[in-house]
Length: 82
Image 1 (cartoon, rainbow, N blue to C red):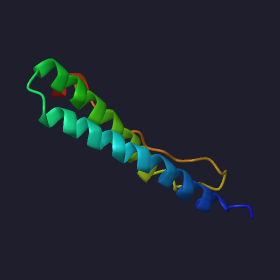
Image 2 (cartoon, rainbow, N blue to C red):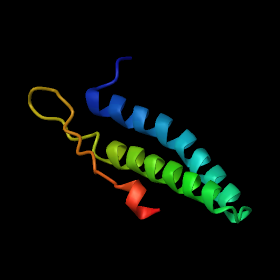
Image 3 (spheres, one colour):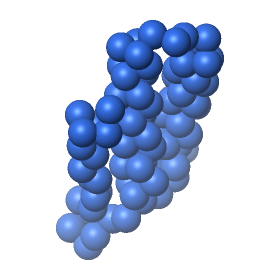
Image 4 (cartoon, helix red, strand yellow):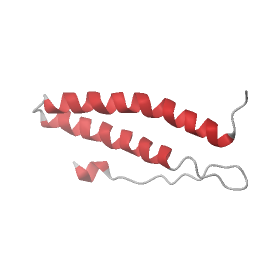
């Protein structure tokens, strides 16, 4: 059975969110066990980028009449946040 566009988007979101959650958990576990500021900065960068992916997925179900995804990609200046 073929999926509708919205069903396909929801399925893809689910398939991406699951490993993304595992990645974020792993980043958290490493961060709480490290006091190395350089490592923590890299972990913060990785967490910011996984958050960005989650934000993009959150907006992925907004489809216009031309059947293109309307995705707003937030800009995060991770370098200045560190």
